[in-house]
Amino acid sequence: MANDVARRLAISVQPVPKQDPEERKRNFEETYLGFDLNAARIEASRCIQCPSAPCQEACPVHNDIPGALALLETGDILGAADKFRETSNLPEMCGRLCPQEKLCEGACVVGFAIRPDGRQEPPVTIGKLEAFCTDYQRQQLGGYPMPRYMPEPTGFKVAVIGSGPAGLAVAEQLADKGHSITVYEYWPEPGGVLVYGIPNFKMRKNIVDEYIAHLEAMGVTFICNTYVGRDITIDELFQQGFHAVFIGTGAGVGNEMGIEGEDLEGVYSATEFLVRGNLAPELLPERLRSPLPRMHDVVVIGGGDTSMDCVRTAVRLGAENVTCVYRRTEAEMLGRAEERKNAREEGVRFEMLTLPTRILGNEHGRVRAVECQRMQLGEPDESGRRRPIPVPGSEFLIPADTVVIAIGYGADPVVPQTTSGIRTDRKALIQVDEKGRTTRPGVFAGGDNVNGADLVVTALADGRRAAEAIHEYLMTLPAARR
Image 1 (cartoon, rainbow, N blue to C red):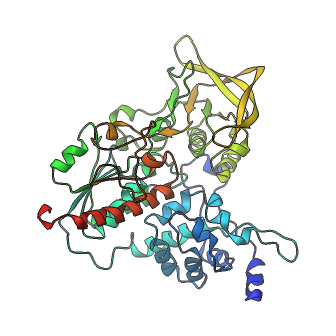
Image 2: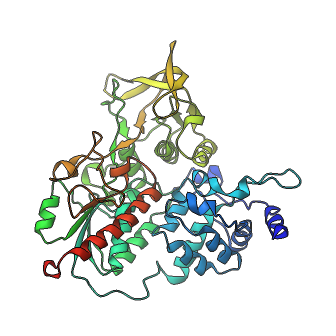
Image 3: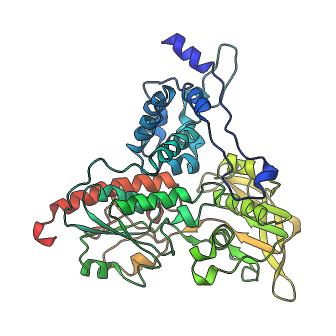
C-alpha cells in the first residue's frame, strides 16, 4: 500500500491544454481544450484513493471522486461518468464552472503531500477529469444518458420557477420519479444563468442545449418568456392544478454602485453586457437585441468571476484597453485564480486597491472616464476581509468609453412579494428549512434566491435536496387530489 501511494505521488500533474491567448482573444470558443484519454488516465492515477476521501466531503453534492477516478484509471470512462452522475445532474458543467481549488481539489491530499525529494505537486485536476468523462460519454451515446426505465406517471404536477442549476436538478429528479414537471423561465430560452450568465469561452452552449433536450425527452415541459410574479403568480399556478411549486429564480438583480454617472450612455450592468456580448440576438428579449457599440477603453468594476467574464468578453469584442478595477487586493478577490490568470494572459490590466468615485461623461451624455481613488486596507469587516480605506489626495482618472458594473447580485423580490405565506429576509432571500421547504406548504425553494449569489454546485445541491422533500410531500397528498 505504501509503495503504491509513493508511486502515485511520484506522478507529475498532467497539463490541461488550452488555446493560445492570442488565438483565443479572437474567438468565443472554450479556453480549455481538455484532456486526451492518455493524459486523463495518467492524471486519474495520481489519486491515492485515501479512505477518508476529503475531496468527496468537500464536494457540495458529495461526488464519489475516488470511485470515478479509479474507473477512469482502468479505462472505464463510461463507468466513471456514471459514477459522477450518481450524485450530480450537471457534472460536465460543474467540471468547468466549480471553483475546485476551494472545494474538492482544495481538500485533495495529493496537493499537500511532501515527496521524499521535497517536491510538491498540485492536487489531482478533478474538475477537468469530471468534464472529460462526461463529455466522452455524451459523444459516445449521442446525448445525455436516459434512465433505464421510465416510471409510471404519478398524476402529480409540479411547477418549477427558473431553469438554472437548482430548477433543472429539481426537474430531472422529479421527472425520474414519474411526476409531471413544467418549468417556467423568464428568458426566451431555458437554461437560466447557464445560458445567460456563463460566456461561451468558459462553457459552450450546446452542453446546456443537449441537457434541455434530455429533460424534454423525459417529459419535462419548458415555458419561456414568462415572468412568474407578473405574468402569472404562484397562487394562479396552484389554481391551475399544480400540487407543488419550486422557486429557483436565482440572484439576477445586479447591484449598483450608487455613484454619479451610472446613468450615462455606455454604462452597463454585467448581465446586459454579457448577454449582448455573448449571445445571438434571437436568444434575447427584443430590448437587448441590438449589438453593443464598438468599444476601445473598457473599465469593469468588481473582483468576482462575473467581472472576469466581463473583461474577457470585452477583449473578444475588440476593446484595445480593458481594465478591472477592484477596491481591495487580489488576496481578497472571491473569484477563481485561474480566471484572473486567463484574463492577464489576454491583456487585461488590473487596478487593485482602487475605488471608483464617479463616472464622467462628455457633452453628449456618453461616458468618457472613471474617476477613482486609491485605497489602503484597514481592519477586517463583517465578511472577514480587510476593509478598504480611502487614501486622501489620491484621485485619478481612467479613460473609458464603456463601463461595466459587476459588483454582485441580489435576489429578485417579485416572486415572494406576490405570493402569500412565504417569509423572506430584508434582502428578499426566501427562508427555508433544511429540506428547502418554505413557510407555505407545497412551496419549496433553493439556490441563489435562498443563499444569495453562490455557486452552480451549491444551487444544484439545493435542488436535489428540495426534490426529495417535494416527492415526500406529494406522497402525503390524497390520490383524489391528482
